[in-house]
Length: 110
Ligand SMILES: [Zn+2]
Image (tube, rainbow, N blue to C red; front, side):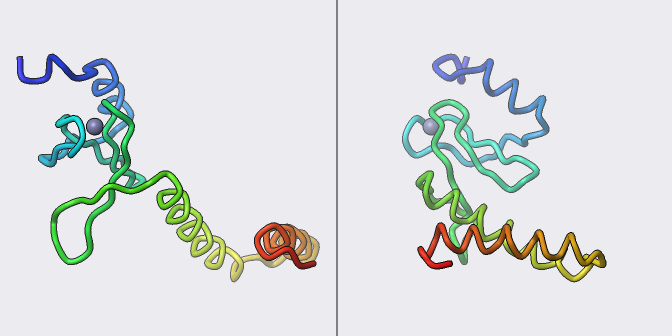
């Protein structure tokens, strides 16, 4: 069995969640990588995260910090799109306050 040293249970769980097994393997443990619908590329065997390397079809490892930064940037772009659809004045005011809090946390200014 080619995958007997890998966590087959977690791989099956990834498939059940809709992830796709890739033809690319983890550099650290050799297990096949899984790509989720969200774009997340993960080695479910050892927990390492990957992303597509720019300009090629290969992947490169991503630290948890880098992964979360990319997710934050993608959320920001999504938020920006939604802002143009808000028609309610109070809702918009609440969004501004929430965004100010995030800015405060990042920049330390009010
Ligand atoms: Zn791995």
